[in-house]
Image (cartoon, rainbow, N blue to C red; front, side, top):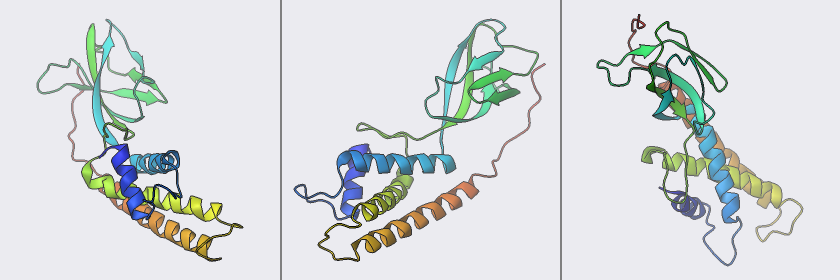
Length: 199
């Protein structure tokens, strides 16, 4: 599901499909979808990997070029070995420091890391099983925004309109965040194995 399709889903759930009389602009809904994606990424990040070029004896690297970087999980070199050879490292902010005596030769090292999910008009890194959850989060943020906007305004729904939107927003965000806690707890324990650092 791309951003356009996600926005359509959010509009449908919020009954905001009348193009001549929309409550939220596309930009506003994009912001709420982005907010929901950001919160979800902290609990269920995108697991990915990349190759970083190195020269002989490099020990320190910058991670600032990794888009949406959240957490480094493993460093592998040489990259064509089987079984894979992993190495100890220290990661502070956007700096990576290799701690083993054996340093990579000229070529590449492979980084395994967690990153924030992305969603554009063309594609997304979000798995389909999480699409509805992001939509619910975005709907919650949008409803709370509208609740604030319609205070002290004439509303066709009457004086309770802000309270109704606030209740909808709080209910959807409560569900969204409870699901994030549940999904996060599923990710706390990882099946892994110890390895002997390369000599």
